[in-house]
Length: 263
Image (tube, rainbow, N blue to C red):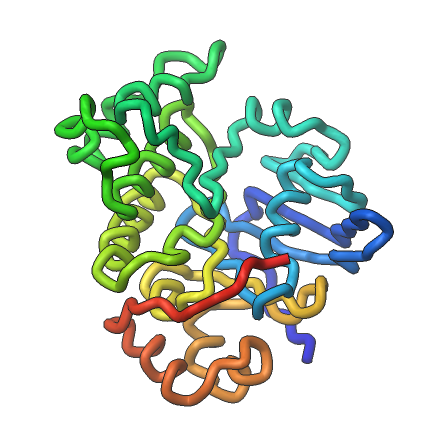
């Protein structure tokens, strides 16, 4: 099932066309198209193994890729990852990547990027005051939601123009998922977010636009609310039953479901 929607109202910040990835002779992505809006949250959805994480890694140059990846109007598909980071893409990986033995302040300090200007600690502490309060606490003793604050906070320090958050609620308890939702909601007020997620209630709460992958290809692009309101489409594209889709539409159930690692 392949559907598409009219382009975003404004020029996309990130525009990906015909992204293809081959790893060890195995074709993972077969031509992914996606746009990330210049504001708010764009969700990247799909069943387990659809290629969501590989798409993110392809955008970031962490795996060999072909196609077109335009960021802020510049073609970047041939650039190395460090060059993309310098252009303003922040990445919060699915395992959060905090240094458990270091304090919150030390984790943030390590994320400072030379040449990026004065680190935006005022913005990070305005969005996440708890990080200032817990500056001397070791990151390994934080809750999952607090660690996610550190991961997102690091991406905001250097004046990034885009945050990519990969499965930020994976493996978290429902109460912590609600906390992470607030973290992402606050971050998206400052910087556009590409959110890789399987929790449809979270997507319903945060995302204006969505892209759905199936078997390494783009299967759907359009408003997130329209997709979640269509139980037939969510069942066909995501394998979501009527009960789960209804919960997502209500926007109040932020519980997670069990999920396997993505391709």
